[in-house]
Image 1 (cartoon, one colour):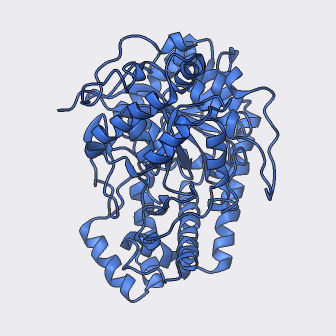
Image 2 (cartoon, helix red, strand yellow; image 1 turned 90 degrees about the vertical axis):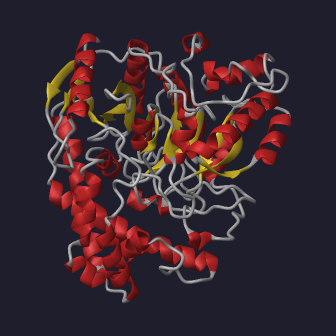
Length: 520
């Protein structure tokens, strides 16, 4: 299949001249599996690929700020070692600096709270990444504790979108998405608790699939992530790279509270299988927001026409959701998890979390989490569980295979646009000093934060709550050249249908060779 990813490549961000003796000039012409095949055949060495990736990171990262910790020595050592049989043997890779513990390296989670912490072990997901054969060269930028759908931590600064350096790369896996979009690596690790793989994939013109709950590991450091809403996987250019990596990292681990039925066949095999005639629902009404940009609506309706031309049955329909109640419950869950993150961090570091070592908005969320009772938290979780049941019944009753929406309600916004306004930050600082969590709740801080953020990410978080697989596919670009992802949610446990459909869409409307414009 490598031939489908060969051919002329539009110019990417400005790079220095290649050195033929040490780097691989055709790096952009291949996806991860294509590069691994070259290594296997002896057409290029893993060291050449790693040196190429290092050169690109060093050249492009000052503009983009995607990589916040380099692991070049480890990467070169791994590249020079006897190659394993994994599907991505010798392929350069980056991991997100959140949850992905890498033994001997810092993990900061975008926070000053973890200053000086060195991971004593690999997380299970990192072990499995390594088992796939990738060569890990560094860690990518993320918002503090992965709390926002944009990557602008105070600690490391914002990650810039390669399509327009003034725009967001999304979040919380924004560093990984920007690195892949810029051509530093062909794929990178990410996590998704409210859209954090799919949002940056949409912003950066990439493919991003969130697997079904339980499909990939969370241990041994963590149990369930965000009450089961969060899961780890990758962001890629090609559909097949995503499928092959999911094959490599899927499966139960010791201590799992539950397991999910394995797929009938490898996910990589699904990419080239015909999906058949699917019954697909679509809506341009934001599931959790109030507004939808005209260009995003237009992109959705164009995708609907494409799906119909491919033989699918497409009808307009939307799942039942009490938007306001869902938002309140979801954000309350996030506030509770944020409070727990600070407790965990304090225990690991042996120092208290405070406004001196965490961002004020993080501190405010944690205060809100502490201000609610255990009963209120349990009630919120029950509401989310009931919502998930209702969405699942809607899919089953109407015999829908897939629901299609825009991934986001607008193209990527200007960096800083979703940050709390100055007057809200000032209020948070004052209230934070007096630990006035209850006052903040009464002041409506929860509702303000929910409206501002969820108006933009109005569809992805629903499927974190339901646990269903969902993907963002780069099918459209705005008039100004910014990527617009189209979001597809499948039935629980049915990544296979999504991969078949994604493979069909990738053939019908290829995006692999579409690259960010040259930057001086």
